[in-house]
Each structure stands twice: as C-alpha cells, then as structure tokens.
Length: 260
Image 1: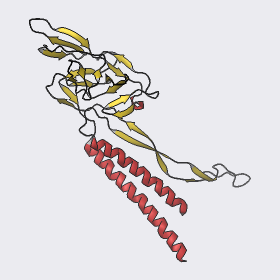
Image 2: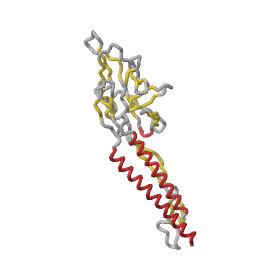
Image 3: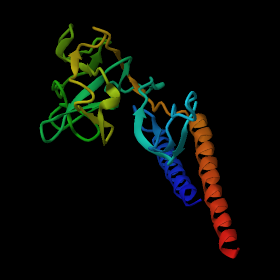
Image 4: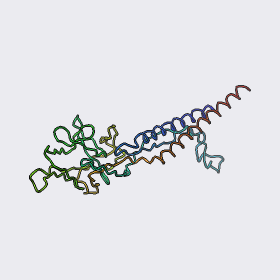
C-alpha cells in the first residue's frame, strides 16, 4: 500500500512535466519559427518478486513471473521540426526557409547559433542582423544608398544602386542542416547550439543537397497546433487527477487499517 503512494507520486510528477511542456508550446504559439516539443516518458525499475521462467515444479516453469513497477519518469523532450505556416509580410528582409535547414548567426562570443526565425533587420552599419542584433553568417552588408534588396530562393542577395541598370551581388545566404536536429540545444532567443548529439552542421546554399529554399517576404510561423495542444492539456490534467485519486485511495486504505 505504501508502494502505491510513491508510484502514484511519480505519475503526478510526470503529468506535471507534460503539462509544463504543453504550456511552453502554447506560450510560443506566436513565436517565429518555433518548433513544438513533446515530452517522452519511460517506466522505472521493477521489483522482481518472482523471476519469469522460474521453476514451479520439477517439470514446469512460471510463464510470466511476478514483477512490480515503481512508476514513470520523463526521459526526454522531443522537438518536432515540422514545417510551420508561411506568413506573407511584404518586408524584403523577412526570410523563411521552406524545407530543411537553419539560418546561421554569429553570437557575441563568436560562436555560431542556428535559427528558423528569419525576421532580419539592418544595423547602423548596414549589416544584416537578427532581432537580437547578432550578425548573419556569412556577413552581408547593404549600402545605405541601395534602392532595393532582392534575395533569390537560392540565397543570392542582390541590390540596386542609383545610376546602375544591373543589380549588384553583395553576398549569398547559406543555411545549415544537422543529421539529428532534435539533438540541438535550445538557448532561447529562437536560437539553437550544436551538440555532440546533433552532429556537425552541414553548410550549403539553399536548394542544394536537400536543403530548403529561401522565400523572401515571408516569415515561418510556429508549428504549434492549438487544438492538439488543448487535447494534450486535457489528457495531462486527467492523468494527474487519476494519479491523485490513487494517492487518496491508498490513504483511505491506510486509514481503515489504523482504525482496525
């Protein structure tokens, strides 16, 4: 009976962790390029009271054994990199990757961060930066007298200057992919970092080697499905209630035992 109290406690903890994950998804429903997360659980160790296959007589064995579980616990959080909806913005520096890949930005400490958020701006020197002011990698500078900025699906950045009939190329946007993007480390600000689990980045031009293409004037929205998250929210709540009911039942049985 005491065992059931602690087993139900692990179930309540797991339901709370799932609720935390769902809440984070819902909080980021309007975050550019956000990828929804899913909590993953595993059952805990088992107390083996009778080994499966143990002898029940000289000629027979126990077919199932006697094993008692000790509950469940979260083992990981999967990030689902399904494509988010494309939102038209009419802004020349808003970019969205349609397909696989991440934009690269150089962080203040010199490391490279990876993002699906393509809401880029120009800083005071005309360099393309993200909303935190981190430089796009490789760096691209747009002159102050540029009349327009055109970015092709393959990442070529061209500008029109006064008095020139032909556009001038000022750089090429590259994107990166990973063999295991779920292994990337989330650090906030819509950024990821490379880890040993993600593998090394594979850099290339958009549209080549399986990489996605760049769409100018679009922003990739969050891929959170509010309806699905609300259903998951209800199931997490009910699972928490059921486990709390198991705690209450065990308590009532203990109370009855002490009264006797």
